[in-house]
Amino acid sequence: CGLCLCKQPFQSSKCHCGRKTWTSRNRNLERAGWQTRLLKTCSDVLIVGPDQRKLAESVHSLKDLQPYSMIQLGADTSSYHTYSQFYLKHGLTMHADIEVATADLILPMVEKNLGIGFLPLELTQTALQQKRVFQIPLQEEIPERGIYMIYKARKEENQAREKFLDMLNFSQKESGKI
Image 1 (tube, rainbow, N blue to C red):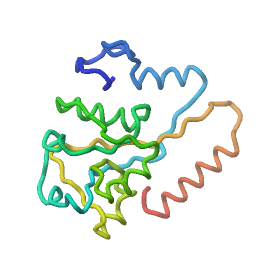
Image 2: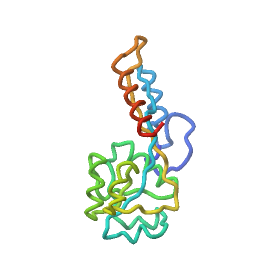
Image 3: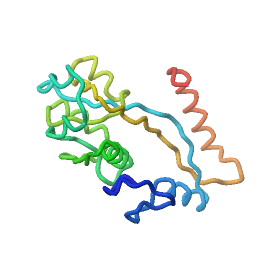
Image 4: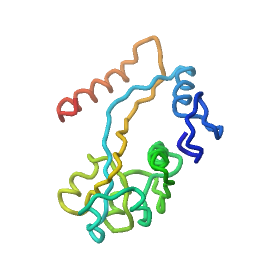
């Protein structure tokens, strides 16, 4: 599940600690009449503020960076879950020193040198170009993440949903994402 330290592979919809896995949650959604659709994938980067820009000058391991304050979304988010799994995969436990409610709060806190944080590259590009933050190269490969739409499955066509999806596809084609 990524939330415990057992590190044993699970063979059902539950981890050895008893927590439900994302796969089982997804199946439960489908059984309840909901569907999921991948809208977009995104790549995250680890960023640091100007006072600690030396961290951006060489490659670091996650273990090397544990003494630094980590700014992260709260424990009830899928981002926190993803990074907990990422750290566990490398034999570490993630500790968020500062938890924020929304991802858009991470960048200004890193800019003010309050810690380091993971954010989608798209959200950091301007700040990286303007040298307000710096990317920390990692030895470990940061997992790619997906943005999903969860919607109620119905036999009849939902015009609002289809219009929304058409707008997303058009927007992604225009920006070169598709």
